[in-house]
Each structure stands twice: as C-alpha cells, then as structure tokens.
Image (cartoon, rainbow over all chains, first blue to last red; front, side):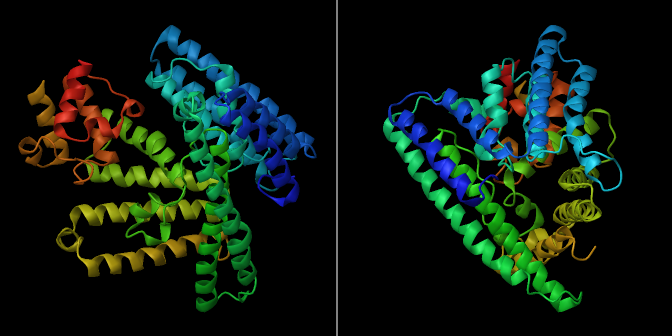
Length: 383
Length: 76
C-alpha cells in the first residue's frame, strides 16, 4: 500500500475517517484518535516494507530524544549557540545518511531509506530552531509524535509548523465549525483526486508520446507538459493532504496558489510549493542573512540577498536528492532570484513601469518560460 | 525609544515616509521584505539591545511604524 495511491489506501482512509467524524460531531478532542489513526495508516503502508518500517521507528525515537534532550539543555544552559548547532546537525544526520547512501555505487546498503524522511526532518529542525529562539519551551511526547507522524501529510507535506499544528489539535471545535471544516476538506480531497488521478494521469500519457530525440520542439513540448504534470500531480496530492487533515481538525496550510500566474520568479516561489519555500525562507535564508549581518560579512544588502538566495536555493535543490539535475535546478533558481533582486532594486525602468498592464504581461510571459525551463532541468531529460 | 526605532526603520527602509505616516503598511508598500526585516532585527539588537528571534515575530504585529514602536516598547 502507498499513501494516496490505489483502492486499498482509499478504502482504509474511509474507514479511518468515520470515527474521526463521529468524534468531531460529538465535539470531542481528536488528538489521541489522530495519533492512533496515523499509527494504523503508517503501519499498513509500511507492512510489506519491514526494513523501512524499522528505520522509521528508529528515526522517530532518535528525533524524539533529540528534541526532548535539546528542550532540557536549552532550559538548563540558555541560548548556547554550540549546543543549538549540534542539535540541528544531529537531527539532520539520518537524512544525510539516507541521501548519501541513495547515490548509486557509493555504499552497499541504504540507510534510513523510508518514504517521508525528507519531510519529517523539516518538522524536527523547525522545533529545534524555535526551541533555541525560546518560542517553544515545552512539548509533550504525544504532541510531538502527533505532529511528526500526522499521516495525511506524512509522505510529502505540506510542511506544517508545530505550534500551529498543536494549536489546531487542541482547539475545541463546535459541531458547526467542525462540519464546515469537514465540508471544505471533503471538497479539497475530491478536487485533489481529480487533479492527480484524472488530469495529471492524462498529461502523463501525453508526456510519454513526446519525441525521445532531444531537439528544441520536443524539449519545449516536454517542458510544458512536465510542468503542468508536476503541478496537477503535486497540487492534487497536497489538496488531498489538506482535505484529509481537516477531518482531524487540522487546518493544514495550502501548498499552491495559481503558480503559473506568477509575474516574476520571487512571486513564483510564493505560489509554488509554498510551505517548502516559506520553510527555507524562515529557517535558512533569514538565519543565514541574520548571521551575516551580525558578523559583518556583507558589503551591502543586495549582496546579502543574492548570496542568501544562492545558498538557499542550492540547498533546496540538494534536498531533492544528490543528483546533478536537482543541484543545477537549485542553482538555476538561485541565480534567477538573485538577478531578479538586482534588477528590481537597481533598474529605473522596472520602478517606472512595474505597475503597468503591458509590463506585467511581458513579465508574466518571461517568467513562465523561465519556470518551464526550470522544470525541464528538474525532470532530468536534458542532463 | 520611539526616535531610535524610527531612525533604525528609516535606515532599513531607505525612505523617510515612515516618519510621516504611522499607519503605513510596510509589507504591502514594499518597504519591508524578508531580507530587510532580518536587518531590522539585527539593528534592533545591536543598537537598542532588544533580542527578537525571527520565529517570535508575527508580521501582522509590526506591519506599520506605529505597531512596530508599540511592539518594541512592550519588549523593553
């Protein structure tokens, strides 16, 4: 069984949602049932993959100890940068081992290879960083596990934030509020199913018909088809995850907001895989730039922005996997964001015309081509 | 403190309009973005001794010059 794939998953999902709906209508708190539901669904998905299942359990235990351990140390010794950095590095070690052992021919066995590890790691790092900031001072084991293992978003996000998640999970919904939430969730779940299993599947069929010869026309066709396929596939999955989450009283954040209407690359990253780019903005870009300002690394702000974007997007590329096309994809977007920033800050032309209709149309058209070319890189077809 | 916050904000936004309009939305007007926001936090720490972590901050709480001043004064 796999997440959001196949009849057996959706049958299980229906069964799992029934008690949630009953509890919700009875205005009972759902957090214990939510954890139970996650354990059952994840258990079923990993049933025929015992090695992955073992790594998942090991991973959860390690990260639980790290998070609880760091909370204790933070309280005891205060804001110590070296303890904080060690905790962050240790929390990433399993993901690093996974990604490195994934590279073919490098290692004999694959370590921590289970679906979802990339996304779980974001959640753990966020908790450690916010513990350092002093925003998180307490975290019950059940709340941590519930957040970490929340099955609707387990495999591919959207990447929620622990404080937001916890707040939702503790909210005593009135019956009418809960039913509104579920109604909206059901609609998202069904839209997601249509996106992924009808539209994306259809585009994928057409994608297979594209000429295998690499030439301008075939690459153009491939880039556009692949871009739209990626959108409907991933936005479809994300909608299903958001929709399913609603049944448990969790308002999972949305991941997409009409990305192909973006008028520049910065706009694109506010609309495409939103929870990922916001995570990187808040926990990598901002932190890096902050450190740089404090240590006086930068000559000026523009330089800081460009360097920040480059590092941010390159790490984002590497996070997708240690393959050359992912890394180039990250670099490509880093360069585009950097150039956009320079252009928007320096160009008088931009400042003068940015609000004009014709300017926005041209800018949108160029952005769309750059985005689609990015997907062509990401697909690995030309590298 | 008000004057200090305003002069830091003026330097970060590179615009003296923030002194004239206390209820101007800094994010909507493009005067603050994720980058200049970080710079603002660093300067508040360096020059006013107020430590604010990025994750503590809700953009809505400091969206206008008046709100920012109120937020900072509350933190002192």
